[in-house]
Image 1 (cartoon, rainbow, N blue to C red):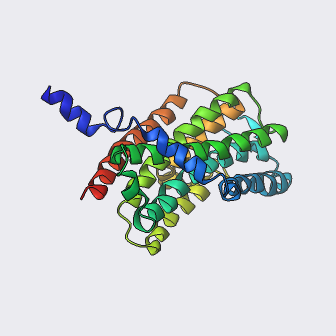
Image 2 (image 1 turned 90 degrees about the horizontal axis):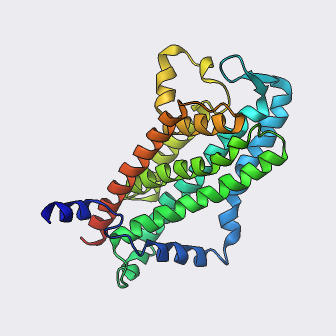
Length: 269
């Protein structure tokens, strides 16, 4: 039994996260009257799609996605914007909102007075961040399909792919947030997110990078998310997509485990 207890202490699910759904419900109720804040993140990737993908795409023309296949620039950029939408939605909730609840609102002090525990808090907040990212990416996929830049029915699998991106970034975002001391520390998060957004093969192919730095781009999590969703939306599905799935799944799993332990330590100290 000692081995079972050790595993139960290490894993946030199902050992101590059975009530996490109630925290997700609490967050959903809290946004009923502030829904404009929730949906505001939907428009940013859509604006990027039409300003860069469609507007600038008229000047750029077609782009080589690899293997000699040429697609219009809007169809090349659209998957990257969807991946970025999932990332941004998840990161916003698991960093800024979590920090406010943890340091200023002291929300979790009240939560711990209920049957919920610290692991429920970690899994519930990550779950809510994942749902927010999924909301953004789903809306974007609908707009992209209406704009005619979705080339395959494989794109339906882009929704669970976006959920995986949201899980990975939400879990790591929460882990990082537990170490932040003030609002100024969020500059470090932006310092990490902005280069990833610009240089993860989002706006131009990986082949345009010098070979000496190409491996750095391929090591970033957003690159794997962009490549995965791009393959699905363009219908270029091959076994290599499993490498992207594995990367993000491991990132999400490790992030959830670490975030759960950190939240438990902070709330019970």
